[in-house]
Length: 381
Image (tube, rainbow, N blue to C red; front, side):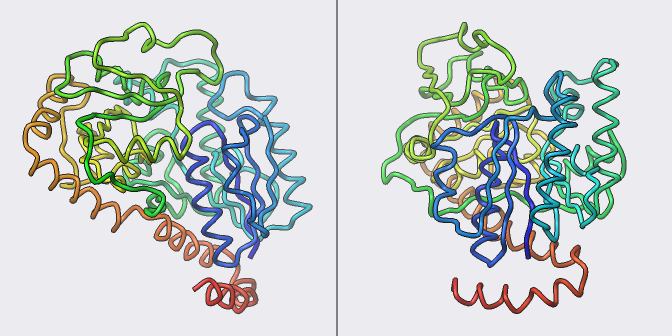
């Protein structure tokens, strides 16, 4: 079976894409991958080398949440349709809403990773102001959803946001994002350090919450400070304080080392439809302190220590409880690790997508392709 997958190179969707595409190819699928948002750096594409059934087409077209992106989206849709006509995929796996309306007629799966309206509501507590751009954005998201054969989100909360702000998705389902546990490790002795990872220019990630009070341990904030559309310093750059270390966006090796040394991970987001960084931290043996938002409560249950959303005092208390009690800290880290192993592995994610693909692709095609896929999977085992 040949799958055309779209991705962007700006945030966590690229990491998600790596796990998905690698897993699909190991199961015998052929993948055509088209990326948007900017040509990736060599370190971002290192994982592609050696994947013989992958046809990768990087582009620099703007993403649908970017201002002044209309011309780029129109051109990128035409380009995507031409790639589909050339490569003849059996299914489109689309990680942007806009391309749900493509003219190429095969089953179309749209994955709702995030959206502008639910982000705005989570950060500002109200609907975004009316504007011609916002009306256009709502239309293209709604069109992408209604044109899709099926819609997936990484959490039940995200599916509910799509229904609330746009329209009821057809065949809406939840497939959790996942990471490969063996990529991460926990140091035998953890450093007394609190880490958070995320885009520092994104108010939804809320990294500045860690700057509002003195925390019980040193704090490390790692992530891109440069907005993909704006020049200049971020707010965090002007708020340096003792005990807080800022790191640029980390390579995978650097991130593994950082999380492996970290005792406590602070998931401080106000907006997080899923969040790969807490999963990576859990696989690295970190205790998880998480903002009490609906998505984190849904995803982590009793495997995280929660604090009141956007409340620096509550955050400090949760971190202090862990810092002062080594047994509680170790137990919390173990619960987070066990939970991630059960629900958030890349293997589980890929297998659930494969099951969905086989439901969406016409039966006669699935039956014809099944023997080849089974043979490849047996070889991989």
